[in-house]
Length: 220
Ligand code: CA
Image: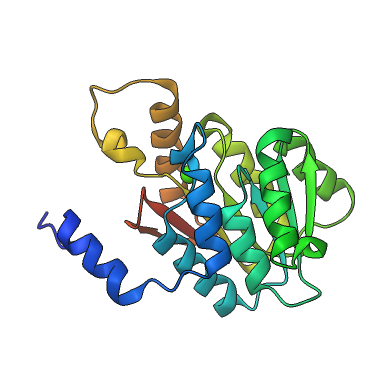
């Protein structure tokens, strides 16, 4: 197969950022603060965040779910791009990291839009289904433990409306998914997830090679 997608070296990546990144000041501050924390690689790339903001705008999303919050960069983006009566159900179990997220939601004036659920995400997603919210969400972002992806996706698919979008992060996993020598649990889980969704006729998909790889799945 001929390779059609351009690989980005540092020079080209810096060019891309220089001609396209419009990162609001509050997001830049959060990104810089997060860079000093352990697990800072868990934060999404700023150009990826901008892409997701555009998706939220295009969808006219109002009800959204965030599976995995960390310090809140992507949930803050979503909150800034849904209308005033929009809602983000934010799932995470870290008090420590979500305290940072809460501080920034508040500073950005969007704290009222975020419904933080400090619990295992599977419990929260099941609670939403039990509460009769199936088919009512416009947008879900999944970026949490990789072994949980299949379950998060399966519940999210029930929660989004027809035409709603599920966005899944890290699907290229620094390239490890394509290297058969690498067999750790996270890599295997992502490989299995990618394989399964590639045949899932309930959704239209695209795997976008931005940042660490982002799969978009639109519910039919
Ligand atoms: Ca991620």
